[in-house]
Image (cartoon, rainbow, N blue to C red):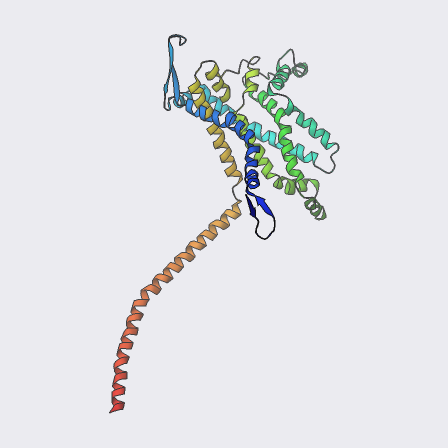
Length: 367
């Protein structure tokens, strides 16, 4: 079956048209299948399990295992767990300190690599990105050798200078983990910012040079405002990753007694699921972690997308002027409506009074 295109002598087959419509979905099918299997179904399963619990009969459940609907009991148990709640506050402190430091560092590196005087930028981009290619477990093991006294050359050097560093102590192990995370992800975030810097037109730099702007002014007044979307993106990724911290504390727990099984929210959910077989509580904790990440990310996006103060003042002023104009129009319309009946009565009385006079005049003329 064929159809003629309007305005042309060519005929297109309806089979070809339907095949063209199906082609994108066929190409997307492998991705969609993996997305549903590895993302959508696990989320639905976690939500379902967070509202169920398992009752075991016997010491290890050898007499039977039954599942039942638990309502919000798992969420209550998770929020009443002081260790889990404390781990969330610990990660908030971690993010408040580590995320800004990493964003500032990767921004500086990106600006330096994209400056006109940078030498071998491709080589240094690869060097800075290389830590991201090291798996988190391997990176944590490597850094643990630099933290443990007796094995670390850094600790030995500082001890020779009269210092007694304790990188794995209760007050410092959190920042030792922050150092590993910063070392791993700074290069990754730097590449995102570099990609944004490369999208800035060269005419902008030429205009800045003609205006006499120096390197610092170009970076502060031109580059940083134009890479704001990349900075927001990397910050959101970092906020989400902060609450998902797991591999680093789990590996360091073997050499750092200060790290317990509820040191981070993800570590607490892992412990409940695979150490205590409390899958319902672990699922509830996972949902709480996801909600916390969503709320923090949404709050940050709302804060960064907020209009400047002068624009907000202009909008308020325009809104106030519009309300005043609307009230004035309503008042004018009310007064005009109120005066119309009187005018109409007067017109009718005048017209009514004029008609007899006209009739009288006509009668006098006839006489």
